[in-house]
Length: 214
Image (cartoon, rainbow, N blue to C red; front, side, top):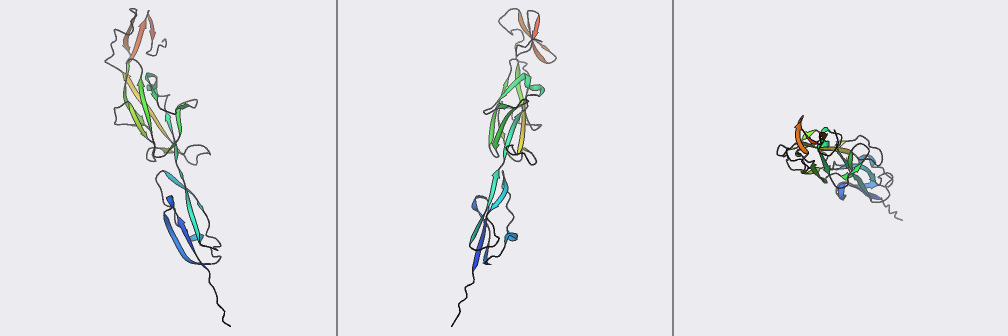
């Protein structure tokens, strides 16, 4: 009597980002463990490797193991404490106040955020400063690139917090084109420059360009 012996042999395949095949091992014996032969997960721009779904321990069937990646999320911090902020405002969709600064949170890496510089009366927009670096653009509208190259990463951020931060502020200065003789239709009001700032004199009282009494 002839005995027929079946030898079970399995295949394990590791899939990376967007299910790209990284590695396949054929002819794996029943109950073998080939976890130590897993490939190194590739680096993917704007994503971090989180974990594998599946296991190559005690293989008893053809197995597919998938890499899980998480997309980075960043916060945009709009520096309202900077000395220039009182000469103008920055506007952007989705801004919220965290008690110190205006923030836009949970922005996906690779996206852009449009910010707008709004100078106060008597001032003009000069430039943007992104993470302490002056930007070349002279436009008061700026597309902030939320990328790995720009973001300042946070090491092991707490659950629910973003993976990094981008900080921006606008520089404003006195507009020399401002007519300092006609601050208001009130004949008792006029403008003048003091310490490189526009000061409004009204009825012998001093006010800044926002109307705050000095």
